Amino acid sequence: MCPKNASYYGNRAATLMMLGRFREALGDAQQSVRLDDSFVRGHLREGKCHLSLGNAMAACRSFQRALELDHKNAQAQQEFKNANAVMEYEKIAETDFEKRDFRKVVFCMDRALEFAPACHRFKILKAECLAMLGRYPEAQSVASDILRMDSTNADALYVRGLCLYYEDCIEKAVQFFVQALRMAPDHEKACIACRNAKALKAKKEDGNKAFKEGNYKLAYELYTEALGIDPNNIKTNAKLYCNRGTVNSKLRKLDDAIEDCTNAVKLDDTYIKAYLRRAQCYMDTEQYEEAVRDYEKVYQTEKTKEHKQLLKNAQLELKKSKRKDYYKILGVDKNASEDEIKKAYRKRALMHHPDRHSGASAEVQKEEEKKFKEVGEAFTILSDPKKKTRYDSGQDLDEEGMNMGDFDPNNIFKAFFGGPGGFSFEGRWACCSWEFPDHKPTHSLPLRQLFGSQRGP
Image (cartoon, rainbow, N blue to C red; front, side, top):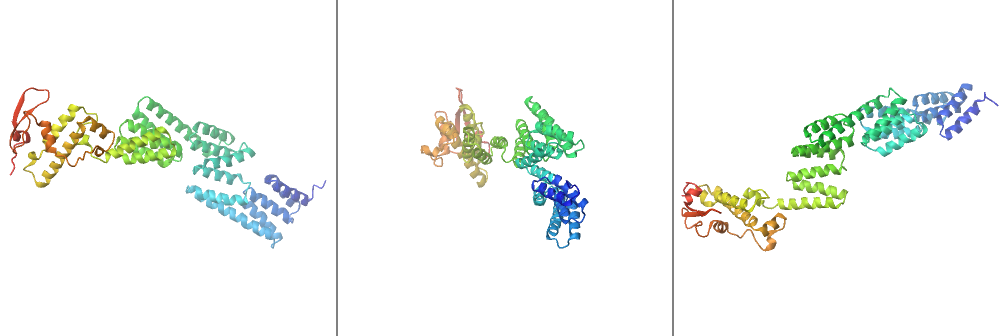
């Protein structure tokens, strides 16, 4: 009815602003000042719409015009300050994004959005930084809100894809990147992300295939190449490190496997599979304290029977590792037979017998006597099925009432070699006879021939 009335356009602009429809409101506000350039409220509303939509520079021009018309206008003065603050936040955010200080960018965008609540550009930048910080649900929420208002927004589609990509849902991520590129073929970030996602998916799948086929060397190379594609993809890279750690464990490169698993948990400290793999490598390298630490972490996270048993086994091995290793003392495997244990004792007992080292220094004699005693201890335990079972199960032998510090290793030696035709220790160079198991002939040998030709003082 009155299409030339500036106030009516200004009033409708104010109403649209209250409804949050700032782009429509901007059109009415601009029309109001075209009709009447001296309409202060029209300029204020135009500036407010520009600012709400994130165009702080255009907002400054509108507020400056309002101040030219009414230099004492308090609202224009405050809004002008707000617009300048937004421009400053934009500037800082741009610099911090280049520095990859994403937390600070999020902070700046939050402050800017207090004055520009309808700015999609600020929201997208914030969402992208949230994704880079691993705060995927928050980033997804921001992008989804924009897509509900504008389903063709390429930036929002890119952020949705980015979140999926960083959560290792690569196939779904590619779909969003492709959709973003349909909306904006020149979208550089979507193009790079799409290329990386496809390359990462292909390398990972090829590595998995090589591993399943037993081609560990090729699998190692493929996982390594995949790790070089995108250092920002933390979750996928954590899995790649763990996969490469598994390959290294198969190749018996256990130290390298531990390092890979450590890198995996540095990237994702909730990655149970990496902790389990590293713990097994620690067990294989007899680093039991570290294994217990990892299994405790796993059990605290997932209290399953399997994880409880793994922790219990590691704790047992740790307990066993802190006592004397009788198998190592005799130089035999833990699965050694009775005959192998006897042969090992014979060899080590003769090697460390004090008479063999009577001409050595006092320090050497003391060390050899200690070893001779340990060899006797080891044979005493491992040659007795009951004691060996208790020892292998990690139980304390002292619970049986046997104090290993009170026995005489010479008695063990005599008992082993003694009996008719056995050793005699009447004198250092006394003769002896030695009956070999399963052999009838008895051989009489002087001890000096057994222990060597060196004489004592």
